[in-house]
Image 1 (tube, rainbow, N blue to C red):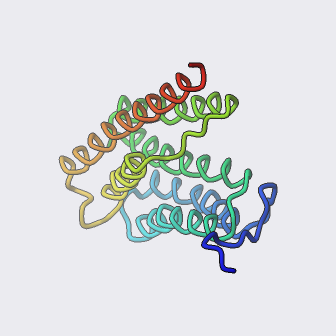
Image 2 (cartoon, rainbow, N blue to C red; image 1 turned 45 degrees about the horizontal axis):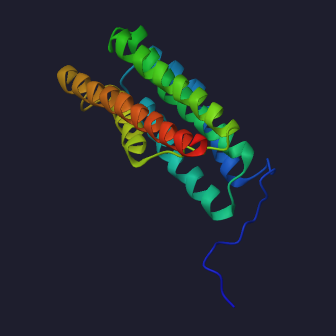
Length: 190
């Protein structure tokens, strides 16, 4: 008898998993990458590191689905994503490339939605990432990457356009999660 569900290699409480190893490696590589962004801005090394830490987000997700999601991974992966994207945006704002208001709006949404998911989780409501949130993350990564890539480093208007699109999707996807949570709370209470 064959089951369509993949076999879980790791239980919910596992810590030392391939997915978590990739997530921790992303965090470790993020530190020198953010320093390079601050010091060099646009270079092939910087954009290469940025690509590696952002593209590997898909790898840790794939590994978690293959081997079984863990509580530690559910905590570590979003933390890594936020450190990487908010770190990149903040460094570029500090350098005067991006406006602080856009970075602050993204930061407030990211932190607020994390808190909202935590409160919802305590009530038994799961608010997984939606497709719009994945597009939002991709555009955030591209906004930073467009500044780092030597070919597009001087395209300031295009960089700001991507940043503003990412900021708009950040707000809209946050509202989508709040709406889903509200609907689930109403069902639960009603």
